[in-house]
Image (tube, rainbow, N blue to C red; front, side, top):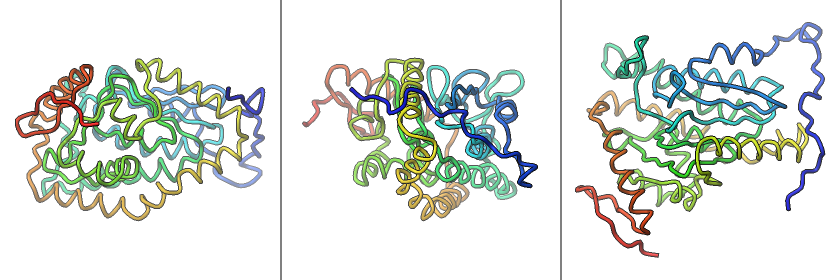
Length: 331
């Protein structure tokens, strides 16, 4: 049985010197950044543990400029807040992500025009994709110096957001596929670092080039996640249990320094690669036809349903141009 080292955590015991006494700029308080980012994050904090659920209008996240920019600011502000001791980051609703696009004031889905690759609008690609995207990833790894726990619920295509966490939990119905190559794009915005580092080069190459559907059980076998929970709320409940264990096991400084040691490989990979690979993705997006709106995510849902059903029977469906068929798994 694992027992905590301390009967109570050290949350809130840090005595901060008044900023005016030191002549420094005070950090942005939780009340302020949680209000500013409420359009894409639902946050709560208790005993130093910050839970942040990504959402679009209270439901699964629509991937677009609001999330891209919101993540950038979240990692900056939450990472600088000395009252955050553990951060839980995950999704809302049935799925982690619903698709690419935005929800307008009438509640209708609209395409992500802010990701335009037209030459006369190239500034959009820089501002809303390259700038925010690179800072999202660098911020998550470099600016946040406390333990992080990712919660992956249901369907997701940017799983790097939870895979870059120190610990990752997923729901039993979680699944993913990387859509970059499948829609004639280059995987350069962070997903390639997360998947390659965790599952290995050979398996990543297969998953990327074939568009393989990766279920929760496959993710566990590949080393992408640590535990599988029945549903989203049980996932968050388990995340809080782990966060409390962390808080009662190591002291404030020990938690932070240990986290930096654990993240050393991520830091090296991201420092060496992310800005070059992201720029490469932007180049191909601007010069090659990338059919974002061809309904790929809907197709992926159909494929995932077949793969999940086959998995229940102890079968597999290997990627094929005709969609594949149920087969026995080679052990």
